[in-house]
Each structure stands twice: as structure tokens, then as C-alpha cells.
Amino acid sequence: MREPYRMGGLPDRVTVYEVGPRDGLQNESAVVPVEVKAEFVARLAAAGHTVIEATSFVHPKWVPQLADAAELLTTMERVPGVRYPVLVPNERGLDRALEHGVTEIAVFASATETFAAKNLNRTLESQFEMFEPVVGRALEHGLRVRAYVSMCFGDPWEGPTPVAQVVEVGRRLLDLGCYELSLGDTIGVGTPGHVGALIEAFGGPGRLAVHFHDTYGQALANTLAALRAGVTVVDASTGGIGGCPYAESATGNLATEDLVWMLHGLGVETGLNLQALVETSTWLAARLGRPSPSRVVQALSPRK
Ligand code: HMG
Ligand code: MG
Image (cartoon, rainbow, N blue to C red; front, side, top):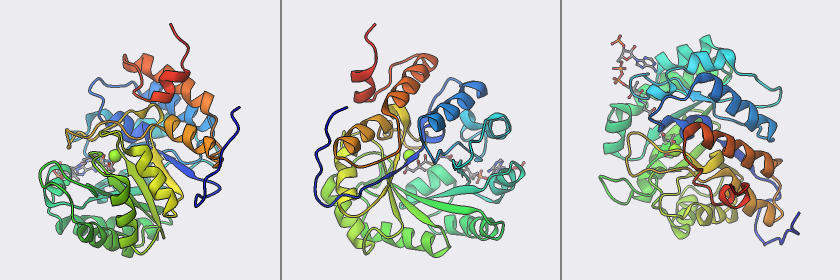
């Protein structure tokens, strides 16, 4: 165990919101068997995760990899004290989630016009007509509702996203009653100063979480900037797998192991067992047929 070296202005504890089974797997072209998904979720809980985004109730033709959402929810083990949110875009998705005993959902909006069309088949404005009844009904059923806003730092078709545009979309989602807003750098183009400026434009960390894809290698630096700005919830994917099928330039999420190595090195608690995460990623990589992109997994995996 290495001795931690603390740094000023950081929280004592960070909640890692694990997105591996959803964001991590949604981009895999070869179908991953439902038993493998269930074991992945179980291993993540055993490694100490307390929130694991399990799957999506989106249109199965839009994301075929997660077409088995219902089957996964009926087969996977649910550990008491662990939350298992699922992605839901519309009322049809909410109905499916309610049928399967889901207690927490996440809606996902776009900060840009083009991505709203490509990912949701909606305009920037009409995405809210889709989310409003979902959030309203979910809250009536006592569900917790998280919101994502994608393309917060840039969009492959529109270029850099104006900060004010992100804040407007984000505020509207929070005003619907979402308990948390996760700022998505879907294509990984953000840099630390931009992260600080965006959080400041929201008036501080409030109910914000961050969700960085690591396309340009900025995810850890951006996370540190977010933590110093007061954010305490960070999305990550075990093994660093992931991406969005509707944004080709989106590669993997910030790897949970890379995040945990940095946080534990800084003396910030996560409740996570790094060795168990690395073993999970090595196990999953064998099932996916390629090595994990996480630097920490590569460094800590046994050499062949
Ligand atoms: P649409 O084609 O406009 O849907 O798609 P519609 O409302 O017109 O309905 C058409 C048909 O689909 C109907 O059937 C519906 O019942 C059915 P019909 O009456 O013709 O027989 N349908 C559904 N079936 C099952 N489940 C559903 C559902 N909804 C409609 N939920 C829709 C609109 C939103 C459904 C579609 O665009 C969609 O599924 N998009 C999801 C795309 C997606 O999952 N992308 C990846 C996740 S986002 C992400 O990764 C970013 C994030 O990580 C943050 C970041 O990185 O920035 C979160
Ligand atoms: Mg994502």
C-alpha cells in the first residue's frame, strides 16, 4: 500500500458512479451474453461499487447490445445497499423499467441540435417534451431520476459547445426534478480550464457530477479540475471501455481503475478495492477478446 499524499481543495470522499455495464458495453458490436453482463455487475458490486448503471431501456434497434435489458434485470443479483440505475429516454422506456422493479433511472439530453437528432431523433427543444412526462411519472412512482447532458464541451458536427447553451439545457433538466446532473464530455475534447469555467457558470458544483470520455487523454486531468471545483460524484467505467454508437469520435470512458489509483494516491476515499476492479477488467477483456485500454489495468495485470 503506497502512502497517500494529500492535496488542498479536494473532498475526503468521492462516489464513483460506475457506467461500465451500460456505457462500457453499449458500443460493443459482438453481442455479450446476458450471463456475462450479470457476472460483470456482480463483480462490480463485490469490488465495492455502490452505484452501477446496469443497462438501458432504449429502442432495441438503436442499441442492439442492450436489447436484453429486461432479461438482465430479471437474472442479475441485486446486493442490498447497491443502486442499479438504468437509462430511460421516453415513456415506453419508463414503462419497461417499472415492469422490472427499477427504482432509479437516468434521462439523457443533448446540449447540441445535431446530437439531439442523431441520438434521440428529436430537436434540442422537443427532447424536453419527451423527458418531461418521463421525469414527472418517475417521481410520482418514487423513483430517483438522474439526468445527463451530452456534448458539453464540443460536438463532432458543431464544434465547441457554448457554455451558456450547456447551462440552459442542464438547468431545465434540474428544474424537472432530477436529483443530479452529469456533465458529459461525450467525445473527450474538454480541458481542465473549460471544466472549471462550466462548473462556475452553473454557479458552483451544486447537484453536478462529471462524465468524461478519454478520447484525448484529458479525463483524469478534467476530473481533478472538477474535484477542485467541489464536485464529488465522478462517472467511470471499469476497464475504460465504452463510447456512444451515435458519436463515432467517442472512445472509452475514464477508466475506474485509473481514477481510483489517482484518488487513493491523493488520500481520497472511494470504498473501492482496486485489485478486485483490475481482476474484473482482466476477466472482461478475455470475454471481449481484447485488452483493457486502462493504463492501470495494464500496469497491474499479471504479465503473460
Ligand atoms: P424514435 O424512432 O423517434 O421512437 O426513437 P418513437 O417514439 O417514434 O417510436 C417508434 C417505435 O419505437 C414505436 O414502436 C415505439 O413503441 C418504439 P411502434 O409503435 O412503431 O411499434 N419505442 C421503443 N421500444 C422499446 N423501448 C423504448 C422505445 N421507444 C420507442 N424505449 C428513441 C426515439 C429515443 C427511442 C431512440 O432514439 C433511442 O432509443 N435512442 C437511444 C440512443 C442511445 O441509447 N444512445 C446511447 C446512450 S446516450 C450516451 O451514451 C451518452 C451518455 O453516456 C453521456 C455522454 O457520454 O455524454 C449518457
Ligand atoms: Mg458516455
